[in-house]
Image (cartoon, rainbow, N blue to C red; front, side, top):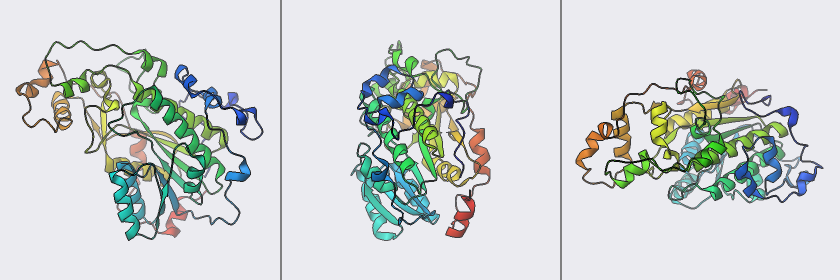
Length: 399
């Protein structure tokens, strides 16, 4: 496959890229990741990353490694998205390296699958252990990468640093493994829609980037004149410390900068709010939910649709750049009420005012100002139910 020449609309200038890692002074930089907090993370962000590339001879796949174009790696496979991807890829005939970060409840599902399928291999991976990442992706032609902290762990400046370092390690590992052909990088809509000076009538697409400096400085608490359930209040009127947007933006920009510099064919999936059972009103994605609703960019995505999008862009020879991914837009008061109710399953008897939520918060029907036409074009030619054999897979992924 031919590596993309650039990200459509990305403010990254290949002419200003840093020297290659091999033989450069940046190989020995220990760096201070905390400095990333003051950057918008273009090409310059790479010099501050703590984990430099290892010598090429220590990470390159040896000559005897079998080049299996039917083998892919899923990382982090211990998330709900990761497990769903593993299952779908196995169903489509792939050999899957499941790289799990944690030993949570989804790890049990992976171990059960391991006992049932000889095409599945399970790896213990650490986002900070470069060797464990290289070992997981060795021999694979593709990587499906996603990083999310546990739901109960809120995003903050420390998690931002962790996510940026993890993204750097994953892409660098792929650059040093000779069998790797394509990386599918899971990002977020929050890496697209948060901009300080933006006309509401203008639609967002894949060319837009959120502004980390704007996200950092928005720490004002919205005024609330209605006594409301605390859980729902957090969703609609959260303190606007938009660390989720900062983390996703900086991590994705870091990944793109490194992929372009190393010649890695990377595609990003910028997903809406992923609708999983463990989702709660404390989700960091929902910081600023009211503003996203008013701007017509509060979008959600089902796990199955998100999985289809990942596999579709991986198998499409024409896919490139970024893809906004969602299949539902929250733009009507009843939609907002339904989402609020879903995020409060612990409320056995919802308060009477819940049905009046749109009126209390003066919600109105908003126009949609975000589009995923680019992804829809890829999905038109994708059959999620098909079983792909090795011969056909090789044809689909031809150079």
